[in-house]
Image (tube, rainbow over the protein chains, first blue to last red):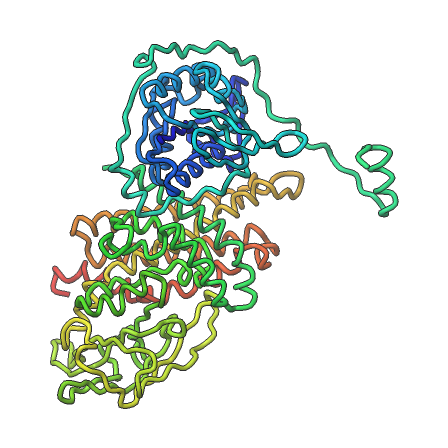
Amino acid sequence: MKVLVPVKRVIDYNVKVRVKADGSGVDLANVKMSMNPFDEIAVEEAIRLKEKGVATEVVVVSIGVKQAQETLRTALAMGADRAILIEATADVHTDIEPLAVAKLLAGVIKEEAPGLVLAGKQAIDNDMNATGQMLSALLGWSQATFVSELAIDGDKAVVTREVDGGLQTISVKMPTIVTVDLRLNEPRYASLPNIMKAKAKPLAIKTPADYGVDVAPRLTVVKTTEPAGRKAGVKVASVEELIAKLKDEAGVI
Amino acid sequence: MHFGLTEEQQMIVDATRAFVENELFPHELAVERSGHLPLELIKEIQKKAIAAGLYAANMPAEVGGAGLDTLSWLLYEKELGRANYALHWTCVARPSNILLAGNAEQREQYLMPCIRGETWDCLAMTEPGAGSDLRGMKASARQDGDDWVLNGTKHFISHVDLAGFAICFMATGEEDTPRGPKKKITAFFVDKGTKGFTVRDGYRNVSHRGYTNGILEFDDCRLNKRQILGEVHKGFEVANSWLGATRLQVASTCLGRAERALGHAISYAAERKQFGQQIGKFQGISFKLADMAMELKAAELLTREAAWKYDQGTVTEADMSMAKLKATEVLAMVADEAIQIHGGMGLMDELPLERIWRDARVERIWEGTSEIQRHIISRELLRPYGA
């Protein structure tokens, strides 16, 4: 079984984000970029499936600027076999929207015919949480989102989902789209020997035209602002006063 | 001329840094406060480092290393160098390159266990009476049939307590040189437990808590000639051809710590407020930061250039000495100024600055003192003029 993992190049989670002066978005010039952490978890899971002999090949796909090659190389260094980059924009500030990404992925999937797509539940830059679901709709495949456990059982995937009320276990028919949550696994470090070997692994470069997809944005960003700063705190004289304030003023206990 | 890192090099930096921050930093304070690195902790981190392919990554691919070029290796060293020395040296060991000089049998017996993390190596050159003047060493080996008999003392021998064996440089004769008589030197593998070979605890020192050194004593220690590394009387040549880049390794680890100290200084200057503003807005602080960043960059460029030339086969002794000298002196300056910017807080061990400042001291002494480096640099300038 082939496993396909879409990965996104996003602003590194350690970077202190700065909003551009004109409010059109976040400043990404000369900022450290990394693989979306949820996608890293998806790559790790795919590699583990391969190590267990369940998967035969792990193909990673990224859609965006040409620098996303670095993200793909990281996935290859972790252990993925092959990469595809769809160069959809030259501008690091242009975010390809979930529907366009889903359409492009659907195109890749038609060519690659994977048995399983493992994707991050969302990207940490725009938090859309939409691509996996849209892809499932476009393909008419089953979907399992927010997954914290995954087991492949013949033509079924048995997954545990993190839902508001707790954990839900469902069984979905393969091929399927699985979007992964934080607790599924702890991704490995890309090992130095594998980093050196990753260079020799194939990385194909495509364009949206190859899949006949229009990636023009349909959403308009009205404004981007920094979160409101924290308000000054108050000092309390005693534990009793603290409890009273938490009860009466904050209403949290 | 291209100064940027390749994709692979950036990935090496990212992967090594993530490991150092997640697996080494959390243990630093305990090691610094106790001055001790417990074996269980070493084994625990070592296992992760092996799994992450970071262990012995300095080695060529054919013996299980990462097969890095010199610049890539030094970028990895720089990231490791950010952490407490004992932690990174022991738990993410880089076996000495000199082990590659061994014959097939010696490689199997000494190199491979070091790469697999089963033991550690150590090098014994320094003696109480022979530091910078190595060829004035007194510890000697004399031939007796197929055997060699070793006598004398070595000290300041790093990590000998953990090591399973020591590569010992012993005087095996004397030759006349234009600068007077000098010792001929031969390198021997000496296993722990060999009769006549005793290891004693060394000295506590100001830098690198958790790091250990020891004293080696040889009392009619008898070795078979199979234990010779390289050829008889060629110990110095073996060391020179295989340990050439260790100065660049020291330079790189210093750059890592200097960068860490500078990072702390910048964020503190941007956050700390006095007299109604961030202290970084005072010129007295901001100019310090500018100088620290500039000096650090200069040191880094010297190191990278030497690394690049090393791979081109055009590096000179002076190139490597300049990199080592500059990086170690910049570390001392940056660590000192970072503490000054922090004021009293900089002296507390909750921050890594006081130890980076202490640790900086040894770097200007080992792997050739600053004076020896200046001697090497100036010698290269003056020799063509016959001076």
